Image (cartoon, rainbow, N blue to C red; front, side, top):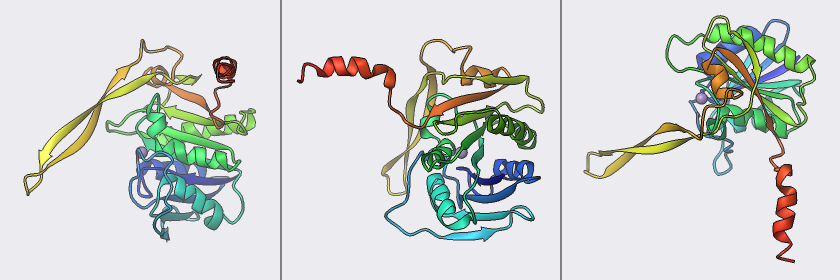
Length: 254
Ligand code: MN
């Protein structure tokens, strides 16, 4: 396959290199990644300023480019300017840290895959379920390759969904689960400090708060228990389930 690789951790991220190494045999790769880390930038695109791209050495035989834009910019730019032919698949990651629950909304990793899907291409987002070293990206990348091959040959509905894959930080995962998104939110905290002129500035952090119980069928629990989690994410966000209720509510408007 012709595969485009992107990420949000930047062109120098170990998760990207491990993924490129795992996917290079038998596939034709193009890599386009942000020149700096762009985690938690979601689906932002750059319209108000120019972008630069340069070719970088990542892996022998692999065309790799840094782009000083967002993850979605990288995919847009690569599809228009860097890929000699339209890729058969776009893979984003492997992100350092999980993209489960509400983190999916903030994720540049998932957004890069979603950007590709919005362009009509099959897309997979990959994230490692841990941020505490040692991070086993090479092992996770080999697992990811097997999961990707299964999704591509197994009829995953890439025309309607992005596959959001979270990999446990293990040499050998216990298995693979089809999962749903577990609800949680962050209670934001802002640490206040003073700049040299005595004015306050703030560092955002947050504490994870589960909404209800942890769902044993969820992405969060699967990765926590040592399983690969694969969640289908809709490309069309319409909540079809609620259209009848919406119509009923709108009846009053006339
Ligand atoms: Mn990231």
